[in-house]
Length: 602
Image (cartoon, one colour):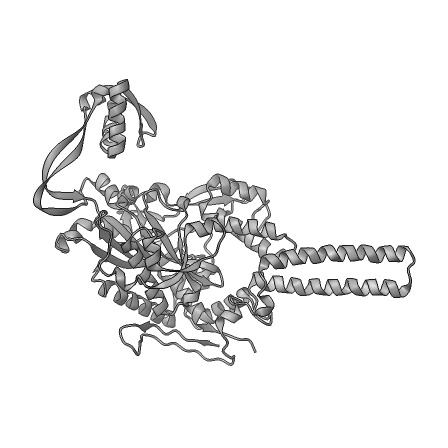
C-alpha cells in the first residue's frame, strides 16, 4: 500500500515538491477511480434508474413464468413441457441475480470485479492513516471523545505544508494582510454577528433515552441506505429519495420533521420514537475572568476577528479599497453527533479570507487570469431540476449572471487552482451554488467547493458574497463606524434621505421602548422610508414592525419627519461588501489523502 502526497507549486515549470510522504507495503497500485467505482466499467455503464426498471420488469416476468409453471403442473402437462417452462423460469431468475449485482455495484460504487466498494476503500484509508500516525482519536487511552483528533508526525508535516502552500497561494501572491486573533470571543461580538441567536443545527432526541441526533443526518442516512441496500424500490421511489437528498439543506424544521415521520425513521440505536426537530446552538460557552459575569464563547469561525479590526486594517492599508485580510486558526463547534473522521469534528483549523470591496465596483483587476478556466459547476437551477453538475467556463458563468460578480468569480477560480495544484483530482471537484433558502438573507451569492470522496460530495471551501452585513452589524452594536470613504475630485450635489424621529412624541407613546423604536426608524432603507412617508401623508398613521420588540407599533405623522435634501459632498461614505472564501483545512487534507491513496488487494 502506498501513500504519495505531492504538493506542487506552479511557480516553476518543473514544479516544486513541498512534501513527499511514501509508505510501501506488499500490495499493488491501481487507479483510484476504478477502485471505488467513480468511473464505472462497461458492465455497470447502465444507469441506476434503467437497472431498477429492468429489474422490476424481470421480477414481473418471473412471477408470470412462475404462474405458467404452476398452471402446467396443475394441468398434468407433459414432463418435457414442464421442464422447459422451469428451465425458462430458472434462466429468468439467473438474469435477475445478475441485474441485482449490477444494481448493487452501481449504487454502492463497487469496482470492476465487485471486490471492493466505497466503505471498504474508506476503511483501508482510515486504517492506514491511523496505523501510520497521520491522525488518531484524541485521549485514546481514555476511550477518546467523539469529534476530537490528534495529528501525528506525518500528519503534522502534511498540515504544515498545506498551510504553507495556502499562505503562498493567497496571502503572499494576493498581498493580503494576515492577522491572528484570540479563540475566546466576548458574547457581545457573537451577539452582533448573529451566532448567539442563529448558529444552530436541528436536533432530535430519543424520546425514551434522551440520546441526541442531528435530524438531517438521520434523514440522509435513511435515504442513502434505502437507495443502496433496498434493490426492490422502484426507479420513481429512488428518484424521490435522491431529490430529498439534493434538497436536504433547504428543508425547514417542520419539513424535516414531516419527512422523518413519513419515512418512519426512529432512533438508530434503540428504534424508539424521536422528538420533533428543534434548534441546538453549536457554540462552546465559557466565561471570561473569575467572576463569571463576562460571558464568552470559543469562536465558531475566525472571520469575526477580522471584521472587528476592519477600521485599523483599513487605516494600515492607507485607507484604500479593495484589500483582503486573512487568518489561519482554530475554530470550535459543539457538533450534535460528530462522525466521518476529520470531516466533522468539534475543533478544527480554518483558513479564512475577508476581501473588502466597494459594493458598487465588484470588478477585479486580475479576473482575466482565471476567466478562461473551465471546471464542474452546479448552479441552483440544475440542482432544483435534478440535473448533474456540468463543465462551465468561469467567464461564461460570470457574464451570464450565474456567478454574481467578477470578484466572487475571481476567488472561485483561485480556489480551483489552489485545490488542483494541491493534488485534488479536478474530475472529482465541483462548485455548487447555494439554494435560495440555504443562503443567509443578506448574502448576494454563495458557492461551495465540494470534493468527492468515499463519503460522497464534501463541502471543503465556502466562497460567499456576504454583502455588507457583518460590518453593518458590528457598527450598529459597537457604535464604531466601520466604513470606507471615496474622495471626489470635485464636490458633488447629492440628494440624501433624512429620517428624523421626534423623540419627545415617541417617548410619550412608547415610554421605555422609545430607543428601540427610534433605532428601527433610523435603520429603514430608502424604499421603506418613502413608503412610510406616503402612508403617513394619506392616512396619518401606519403600522410599523420593530424587530427588537418583535411586534408592530403605530407610528403617527407627528412622530417622524422623512424628507430628501440636496447637499454638496466632498466624499462618499459607505460600508464595504465582503467576499469570503473559507477553507476547512482538515476536510481538504482528508480528501487529499483519499485522492492520493492507491490500493489494490492481492
